[in-house]
Image (tube, rainbow, N blue to C red; front, side, top):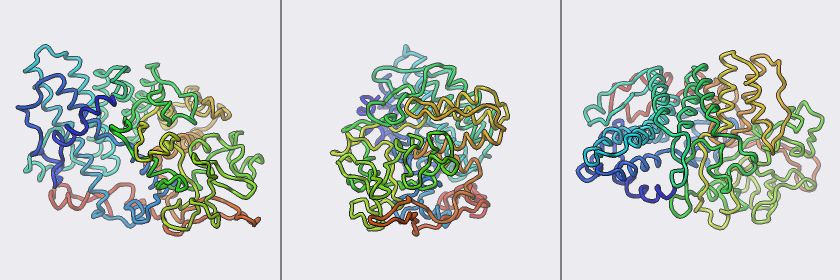
Length: 538
């Protein structure tokens, strides 16, 4: 897949699907490569769908968790801070970008689907199964973005063809239920067109499992729990996927394309690279910190006995990271707690010590380039990138099998169809080889299992961009997104008092009467009054 992307990214992304200046739901592009020159060969069709893959999100997905209770952006002037404070409105440029990028991807998929059959005119013997597979990939990407757009904005236009300017100025909104119906139908139909797996240069393409997994996610978002459980079970029954044995290495170069990965955004050094290390690594390794994990996340990791830290005498407040769920140390760089309890050694040999007064590159409250909480992500920060920080090549996982297991368990819990398979799914995640937490025992109530499941999603999928969506669909954001942001506990050098870092730059506020949806961008409503009414209280 990386070889194929090298051929198409620069050429087709810039010519075939270039975005217009004004959105108008990304109407028919005037600068596209003409059909008289393209859509002639099988290679054209493959290259065109490859270009659609560049629309999928990648390393930026972690930024969603900056607007959740487990993370915060390190950039004080970022639009996400405005959203955390509850001070956003329909003129915020961040919403324009989300809207434009979503409909740009949808338009690109529509344009592909309208033109791909032209290839048959020049190559009448082209493999029909191949054409259907390519159509399935395009329809998946379109449905992927509709899933995201309807979750974020609610009622939105359902556009399944390229629009001219007049159509873009007059199209109205469809109800959320209509969008969810469309998404459900799309993922179900294309699953029949897609293979179970690929090999060789096709590794990384969209599969049957990806279609079922995204249907499960979409149906959870739509609260269609029985259908979500059925879709997740379809992935499980393929017997193609399994949990990677080492959570510690799951996000490394060595683990790419392993059997846990259902869909990822493919990258390649020197070809289609990223700057994740430069943007997110600790300052002590010349990184930009990026996301600041919170104490809420850190305290959520249980002890090795499977108990909350305030329930287990094994937890030592003077050595707070010892005897904890191993995923804590696999997901975050552990900071120095005291002179007697040093933090992790960074890849350059420096001890990670962000305590006030430490004098290190990572010391908090020195300037705005340091972590605001004392915590720093370790996921996707790979040792191989430390000397070439802007040339990363690790793929970013968009859907993995652990998520499918947890979606299956959640859907069954919410549908009150609790059986042994629910416990088995949760316990499989908890008992990965290098995690190995105690099993969740049978006999729990629906509410008990609901809280266990939500906790497991929080720590298993931390900083992968899913917590933002979880707290909103569970309707708990107005509870957890209030007040100041707490960071690490620590003892200053030479002192004995335990202190808790509190970041005073943001006071979070979430209004449940408004903030569970983003506003339709004001610019879009000015272009098209049929996009009214605006979402409530904007």
